[in-house]
Image (cartoon, rainbow, N blue to C red):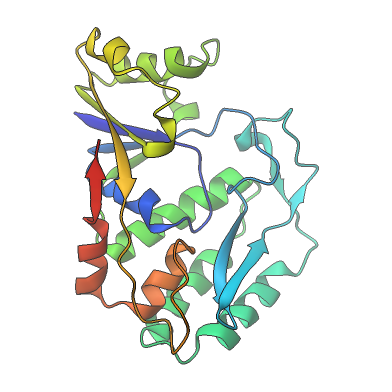
Length: 232
């Protein structure tokens, strides 16, 4: 069993989906503290050839709350504004029609919490990309919020009887391979690679939301991009 554990992000970059695709089970870390100005409720798309950050408004978001406790802001007309921005920016992209239908369905989903919204978005986007990995929220299963950091990750690995844990490359300073190996768990870090693709006639802007990749690349190319990484 190979697993990965990540906080829920909205329309994250391709490396996040590479990680999901690389494992048997992907655990959404939703019962940890919310991070202000993180990637849980915002990301970048291409507008006028440059990165443009969109943000989903939240109600009283705080780092003193768990992610699954943070509520969506119901009164803000962000959905209409976001879809209009996407339309104006990507309507001439080769895959605009079918991708916009996907995004419209996701954006119009109206749950109470940002956790529910991001989980639904990830599930729908993975299905669109042909990713079949099981996705489960940590809050529903593991009952180990008393543990912190690597100890909690290791406990989830034990409960899942995982033999292999994969983390994004940014975690190399946080996790010790020897500690995992002593538990009989192989630890690797996924380093994403992104080959340039056409974004109209603009200079290539890398590491945008996966929405940008889906707008400009067909199914075959997306499948190739999902495998374009190195395990360290």
